[in-house]
Amino acid sequence: MSSDPGVQLTGADYADERQYARVLSRRHLWLLFVAVVTAVLCAPFLHALFGAGGDEGVLLNGAERMLKGERLYVDFFEFLPPGGFILTEAWFSIVGISFVSARSLAILTIVGIACFTYLTCRQASNSAPLSAALALGWRFLGLPCRRRV
Image (cartoon, rainbow, N blue to C red; front, top):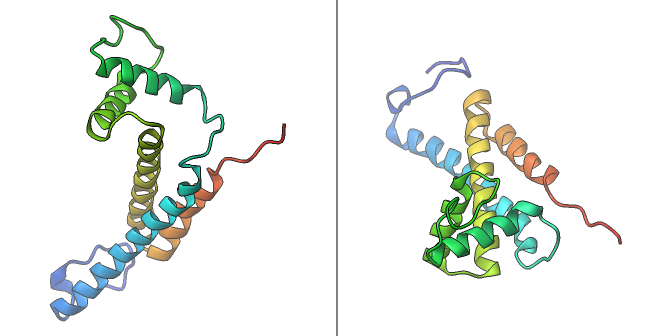
């Protein structure tokens, strides 16, 4: 086995397959940990009513109009690229149109970003705990603050 942390090891580099399976399962546990913690951090905002930005309402309204048969940039126009409308329309067609389904799509997107951040950091640093800390740190920094009115 190589002692260089930057070298990617394969199954042939381990003494037996059980050791290789333990290493892989440990890596998957860190990824699962990042996904679960991120989802738990986002869960309180599933029913919260706060200003999430102007684009959320625009995307939800546009996706609903597209489900009713209207066409983007023909029947209505928005200054946003079509990907968000198409993704939201597809999600609404599968799950249904509701506030909870819209927020669950947002939470799934955030969990996906956190998992891909973990995987990217894991490739760069070759350290699962550090990668998990960086991915979760990104999530902690992104939590919305309550404003007093």
